[in-house]
Image 1 (cartoon, rainbow, N blue to C red):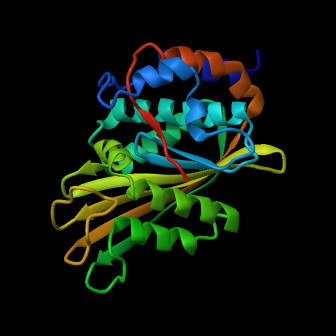
Image 2: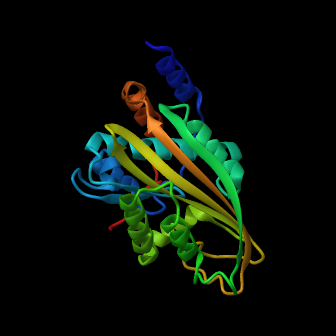
Amino acid sequence: MSNDIAQAAAYIKSATLAPLKVGLYSRAKVLEDVGDRGKYLGEPGQDGAAAVGGTLVSVLANLTGLNRTDVANSLEFASRVAAKEVGSDDHTEAFWNALKTSIFQIGWFKQADEWSSDFIDGTTTGAENFSDYVIANVRNDPLYSSTEKDIVIRALESLRSQAEKRAFFRSFTAGGNKGSFGVNAASVTNGALVMRFSAFTFDCNAVVDDYLIFSIKNIKANVRKDNVEAAANQRTIDAVRQQIEDKLNQAAGDYIDGVDI
Protein backbone atom coordinates (compact mmCIF):
# COMPACT_ATOMS: atom_id res chain seq x y z
CA MET A 1 0.00 0.00 0.00
CA SER A 2 1.43 3.36 -1.02
CA ASN A 3 1.91 6.13 1.51
CA ASP A 4 -0.87 8.26 -0.05
CA ILE A 5 -3.37 5.41 0.17
CA ALA A 6 -2.34 4.55 3.74
CA GLN A 7 -2.74 8.18 4.84
CA ALA A 8 -6.15 8.49 3.18
CA ALA A 9 -7.33 5.23 4.72
CA ALA A 10 -6.19 6.30 8.20
CA TYR A 11 -7.88 9.68 7.83
CA ILE A 12 -11.19 8.14 6.73
CA LYS A 13 -11.11 5.67 9.59
CA SER A 14 -10.55 8.42 12.17
CA ALA A 15 -13.00 10.97 10.70
CA THR A 16 -16.23 11.76 12.51
CA LEU A 17 -19.20 12.68 10.33
CA ALA A 18 -22.07 14.93 11.30
CA PRO A 19 -25.19 12.88 12.11
CA LEU A 20 -28.16 13.03 9.80
CA LYS A 21 -31.80 13.80 10.43
CA VAL A 22 -33.13 10.46 9.31
CA GLY A 23 -35.88 10.56 6.73
CA LEU A 24 -36.45 14.31 6.88
CA TYR A 25 -36.99 14.47 3.13
CA SER A 26 -37.72 10.76 2.60
CA ARG A 27 -34.71 10.25 0.35
CA ALA A 28 -32.93 7.75 2.57
CA LYS A 29 -35.17 4.98 1.23
CA VAL A 30 -34.44 6.06 -2.34
CA LEU A 31 -30.71 5.89 -1.67
CA GLU A 32 -31.17 2.47 -0.11
CA ASP A 33 -32.98 1.30 -3.25
CA VAL A 34 -30.53 2.71 -5.81
CA GLY A 35 -27.51 1.79 -3.70
CA ASP A 36 -25.29 4.40 -5.32
CA ARG A 37 -25.11 8.15 -4.66
CA GLY A 38 -23.72 8.60 -8.16
CA LYS A 39 -27.17 7.76 -9.57
CA TYR A 40 -28.39 11.13 -8.31
CA LEU A 41 -26.03 12.70 -10.84
CA GLY A 42 -27.65 10.94 -13.77
CA GLU A 43 -26.49 8.37 -16.27
CA PRO A 44 -23.19 8.38 -18.20
CA GLY A 45 -23.51 10.17 -21.51
CA GLN A 46 -25.80 12.81 -20.03
CA ASP A 47 -25.19 16.01 -18.10
CA GLY A 48 -26.43 15.77 -14.51
CA ALA A 49 -26.74 17.69 -11.26
CA ALA A 50 -27.50 17.15 -7.60
CA ALA A 51 -27.55 19.02 -4.33
CA VAL A 52 -25.02 17.49 -1.93
CA GLY A 53 -25.55 19.29 1.33
CA GLY A 54 -24.91 22.95 0.58
CA THR A 55 -23.14 22.30 -2.72
CA LEU A 56 -24.89 22.19 -6.09
CA VAL A 57 -22.71 19.84 -8.12
CA SER A 58 -23.05 19.57 -11.89
CA VAL A 59 -21.36 16.88 -13.96
CA LEU A 60 -20.60 16.81 -17.65
CA ALA A 61 -21.78 13.95 -19.81
CA ASN A 62 -18.26 12.50 -20.10
CA LEU A 63 -18.21 11.31 -16.48
CA THR A 64 -18.56 7.55 -16.10
CA GLY A 65 -20.88 6.05 -13.51
CA LEU A 66 -17.91 5.41 -11.24
CA ASN A 67 -16.76 9.03 -11.66
CA ARG A 68 -20.21 10.19 -10.55
CA THR A 69 -20.10 7.92 -7.54
CA ASP A 70 -16.69 9.26 -6.51
CA VAL A 71 -17.79 12.90 -6.85
CA ALA A 72 -20.99 12.37 -4.87
CA ASN A 73 -19.30 10.29 -2.16
CA SER A 74 -16.36 12.68 -1.79
CA LEU A 75 -18.56 15.76 -1.48
CA GLU A 76 -20.93 14.16 1.03
CA PHE A 77 -18.07 12.81 3.12
CA ALA A 78 -16.21 16.13 3.19
CA SER A 79 -19.39 18.12 3.83
CA ARG A 80 -20.35 15.98 6.80
CA VAL A 81 -16.83 16.11 8.23
CA ALA A 82 -16.90 19.91 7.95
CA ALA A 83 -20.37 20.11 9.52
CA LYS A 84 -19.16 18.03 12.46
CA GLU A 85 -16.01 20.09 12.93
CA VAL A 86 -17.42 23.62 12.68
CA GLY A 87 -21.20 23.14 12.97
CA SER A 88 -23.84 22.52 10.33
CA ASP A 89 -25.12 26.10 10.71
CA ASP A 90 -21.75 27.74 10.21
CA HIS A 91 -21.91 29.66 6.93
CA THR A 92 -18.49 31.26 7.11
CA GLU A 93 -15.10 30.50 5.60
CA ALA A 94 -14.47 28.00 8.39
CA PHE A 95 -16.95 25.48 6.98
CA TRP A 96 -15.60 25.63 3.43
CA ASN A 97 -12.00 25.50 4.58
CA ALA A 98 -12.80 22.37 6.60
CA LEU A 99 -14.55 20.85 3.58
CA LYS A 100 -11.52 21.50 1.39
CA THR A 101 -9.14 20.06 3.95
CA SER A 102 -11.18 16.87 3.98
CA ILE A 103 -11.40 16.66 0.18
CA PHE A 104 -7.63 16.91 -0.07
CA GLN A 105 -7.21 14.06 2.42
CA ILE A 106 -9.29 11.48 0.55
CA GLY A 107 -7.68 11.23 -2.86
CA TRP A 108 -7.94 14.69 -4.40
CA PHE A 109 -5.06 17.10 -4.82
CA LYS A 110 -5.18 20.86 -5.01
CA GLN A 111 -4.54 22.63 -8.28
CA ALA A 112 -5.91 26.05 -7.31
CA ASP A 113 -7.42 27.63 -4.19
CA GLU A 114 -8.07 31.36 -3.73
CA TRP A 115 -10.40 33.44 -1.57
CA SER A 116 -11.66 36.84 -2.76
CA SER A 117 -14.03 39.50 -1.39
CA ASP A 118 -16.95 41.48 -2.76
CA PHE A 119 -19.76 43.69 -1.48
CA ILE A 120 -23.41 43.55 -2.52
CA ASP A 121 -25.54 46.68 -2.46
CA GLY A 122 -28.91 45.49 -3.68
CA THR A 123 -29.91 48.90 -4.96
CA THR A 124 -27.03 49.01 -7.44
CA THR A 125 -25.92 45.44 -8.16
CA GLY A 126 -28.48 44.72 -10.88
CA ALA A 127 -29.15 41.22 -9.54
CA GLU A 128 -32.66 40.32 -8.38
CA ASN A 129 -31.53 37.69 -5.88
CA PHE A 130 -28.47 35.85 -4.60
CA SER A 131 -28.56 33.16 -7.28
CA ASP A 132 -28.62 35.86 -9.99
CA TYR A 133 -25.52 37.30 -8.37
CA VAL A 134 -23.82 33.88 -8.40
CA ILE A 135 -24.86 33.23 -12.01
CA ALA A 136 -23.33 36.54 -13.13
CA ASN A 137 -20.20 35.72 -11.18
CA VAL A 138 -19.84 32.25 -12.71
CA ARG A 139 -20.52 33.59 -16.20
CA ASN A 140 -17.50 35.91 -15.91
CA ASP A 141 -15.21 33.50 -14.08
CA PRO A 142 -12.20 32.14 -16.01
CA LEU A 143 -12.08 29.15 -13.64
CA TYR A 144 -14.79 27.44 -15.67
CA SER A 145 -14.86 26.42 -19.31
CA SER A 146 -17.80 27.64 -21.40
CA THR A 147 -19.37 24.17 -21.19
CA GLU A 148 -18.96 24.10 -17.42
CA LYS A 149 -20.45 27.58 -17.08
CA ASP A 150 -23.48 26.47 -19.06
CA ILE A 151 -24.18 23.42 -16.92
CA VAL A 152 -23.63 25.24 -13.61
CA ILE A 153 -26.04 28.00 -14.63
CA ARG A 154 -28.64 25.55 -15.93
CA ALA A 155 -28.49 23.58 -12.70
CA LEU A 156 -28.83 26.69 -10.55
CA GLU A 157 -31.77 28.00 -12.54
CA SER A 158 -33.46 24.59 -12.33
CA LEU A 159 -32.88 24.23 -8.60
CA ARG A 160 -34.36 27.61 -7.73
CA SER A 161 -37.48 26.90 -9.83
CA GLN A 162 -38.43 23.73 -7.90
CA ALA A 163 -39.90 24.43 -4.47
CA GLU A 164 -39.25 21.00 -2.93
CA LYS A 165 -35.67 20.80 -4.19
CA ARG A 166 -35.06 24.36 -3.03
CA ALA A 167 -36.41 23.55 0.45
CA PHE A 168 -33.96 20.67 0.70
CA PHE A 169 -31.06 22.88 -0.34
CA ARG A 170 -32.17 25.69 1.99
CA SER A 171 -31.85 23.40 5.01
CA PHE A 172 -28.07 23.34 4.41
CA THR A 173 -27.53 26.92 3.23
CA ALA A 174 -29.64 29.39 5.21
CA GLY A 175 -28.62 30.70 8.62
CA GLY A 176 -30.43 33.97 9.27
CA ASN A 177 -28.28 36.91 8.28
CA LYS A 178 -25.49 34.52 7.26
CA GLY A 179 -25.76 31.99 4.46
CA SER A 180 -23.55 30.12 2.06
CA PHE A 181 -23.61 27.69 -0.79
CA GLY A 182 -21.25 26.24 -3.34
CA VAL A 183 -21.48 25.51 -7.05
CA ASN A 184 -19.37 22.75 -8.52
CA ALA A 185 -18.59 21.51 -12.02
CA ALA A 186 -17.07 18.06 -12.41
CA SER A 187 -15.59 16.95 -15.72
CA VAL A 188 -13.01 14.62 -17.21
CA THR A 189 -10.20 16.78 -18.56
CA ASN A 190 -7.25 15.22 -20.40
CA GLY A 191 -8.27 11.86 -18.99
CA ALA A 192 -8.40 13.03 -15.36
CA LEU A 193 -11.44 13.58 -13.14
CA VAL A 194 -11.50 17.24 -12.07
CA MET A 195 -13.77 19.31 -9.83
CA ARG A 196 -13.92 23.08 -10.06
CA PHE A 197 -16.04 24.84 -7.48
CA SER A 198 -16.84 28.19 -5.98
CA ALA A 199 -18.07 28.63 -2.42
CA PHE A 200 -19.96 31.84 -1.62
CA THR A 201 -20.53 33.12 1.92
CA PHE A 202 -22.94 36.00 2.55
CA ASP A 203 -22.93 38.17 5.67
CA CYS A 204 -26.03 40.37 5.36
CA ASN A 205 -27.55 43.36 7.11
CA ALA A 206 -30.88 41.52 7.39
CA VAL A 207 -32.25 38.02 7.91
CA VAL A 208 -32.56 36.02 4.69
CA ASP A 209 -34.86 33.00 4.49
CA ASP A 210 -33.65 31.54 1.20
CA TYR A 211 -30.27 32.28 -0.32
CA LEU A 212 -31.43 31.32 -3.81
CA ILE A 213 -34.54 33.41 -4.40
CA PHE A 214 -34.67 36.07 -1.68
CA SER A 215 -34.82 39.55 -3.21
CA ILE A 216 -31.69 41.56 -2.53
CA LYS A 217 -33.18 44.90 -3.51
CA ASN A 218 -32.85 46.19 0.07
CA ILE A 219 -29.93 44.01 1.14
CA LYS A 220 -26.31 44.85 1.74
CA ALA A 221 -23.91 41.96 2.16
CA ASN A 222 -20.24 41.22 2.50
CA VAL A 223 -19.42 38.32 0.20
CA ARG A 224 -16.49 35.95 0.36
CA LYS A 225 -15.81 33.60 -2.53
CA ASP A 226 -13.42 30.67 -2.71
CA ASN A 227 -12.41 29.26 -6.10
CA VAL A 228 -11.01 25.76 -5.91
CA GLU A 229 -9.78 23.30 -8.51
CA ALA A 230 -9.14 19.72 -7.45
CA ALA A 231 -7.98 16.75 -9.51
CA ALA A 232 -8.47 13.12 -8.58
CA ASN A 233 -5.62 10.84 -7.65
CA GLN A 234 -7.57 7.96 -9.14
CA ARG A 235 -5.38 5.25 -7.70
CA THR A 236 -6.01 6.51 -4.18
CA ILE A 237 -9.73 7.06 -4.77
CA ASP A 238 -10.10 3.55 -6.18
CA ALA A 239 -8.36 2.13 -3.11
CA VAL A 240 -10.49 3.93 -0.50
CA ARG A 241 -13.86 4.04 -2.32
CA GLN A 242 -15.40 1.19 -0.34
CA GLN A 243 -14.08 2.58 2.95
CA ILE A 244 -15.79 5.91 2.25
CA GLU A 245 -19.00 4.11 1.28
CA ASP A 246 -18.94 2.10 4.50
CA LYS A 247 -18.40 5.25 6.57
CA LEU A 248 -21.24 7.12 4.86
CA ASN A 249 -23.62 4.19 5.22
CA GLN A 250 -23.18 3.85 8.97
CA ALA A 251 -26.02 6.34 9.41
CA ALA A 252 -29.07 6.42 7.17
CA GLY A 253 -30.42 9.80 6.21
CA ASP A 254 -30.77 12.46 3.59
CA TYR A 255 -27.87 14.52 2.29
CA ILE A 256 -28.19 14.34 -1.47
CA ASP A 257 -30.95 14.95 -3.99
CA GLY A 258 -30.92 14.95 -7.77
CA VAL A 259 -31.71 18.11 -9.72
CA ASP A 260 -33.19 17.89 -13.21
CA ILE A 261 -31.43 19.99 -15.82
